[in-house]
Length: 73
Image (cartoon, rainbow, N blue to C red; front, side):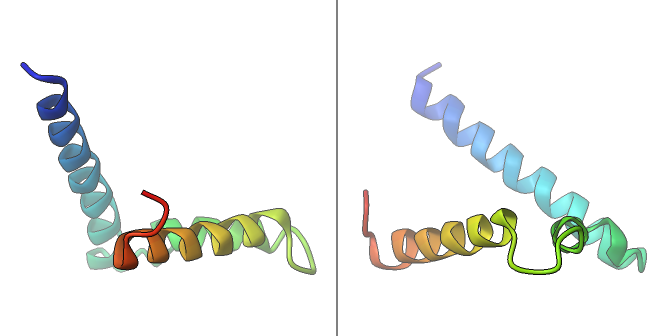
């Protein structure tokens, strides 16, 4: 099997696992089991913007510009 095929399968598996975890948490009414809840829980450890918040903000800016506009390929 080609390496590109293996990586395609792994990315789809990762996406499927992520969606399964998030959607099952939301459908069960347990929003405290979602990724965003865990991020905000870590954020509450500090009273101001922590490294985690800067990291998440920078990552989301990069991800948006990369996926939407094709920058930094």
